[in-house]
Figure 1 (cartoon, rainbow, N blue to C red):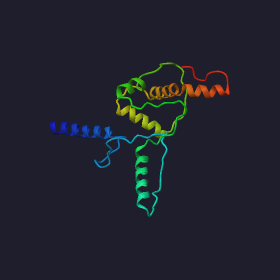
Figure 2 (figure 1 turned 90 degrees about the horizontal axis):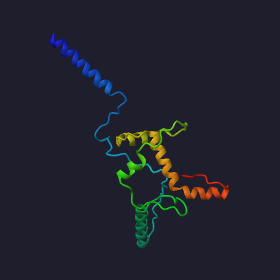
Figure 3 (figure 1 turned 30 degrees about the vertical axis):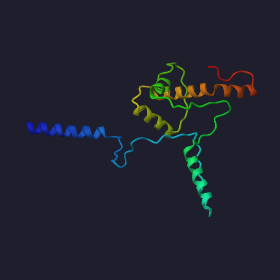
Figure 4 (figure 1 turned 45 degrees about the vertical axis):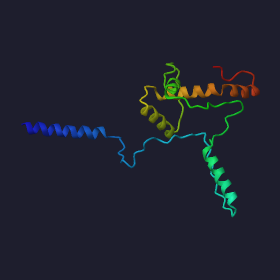
Length: 168
């Protein structure tokens, strides 16, 4: 009789493992990334073809300029008068700024977002083990963006109409 109980227990364990693996990607050690490469949507891709010249001096300056281009940030200019922070914030600041609940309002509106971006946001919140919702995270990011560029947007809007567009 004990063998029947053991068989049932083994079968139950096997089925539970199968159920736990539903929807999980199996990865090998070579296939597993240590981290996901960050995606910068504002970054310009600069590709320069190497110039082949007969003069060594030109080749050296091309190599130096290529190295400088590779080391320099490749971002678009945000606008006049907008300064970007030179030091990246630490995680505690980031968490306080973006990974907190904002409003628990009843006003909800639907919008579309690319599935790749949505999956990236899900992965970020999951990997950080944050209790913030995706909606709250997106809302915090958008509010921060609007606060950062509020003056520029209001200035441009004031040239086109009389009232301030953003009043935070």
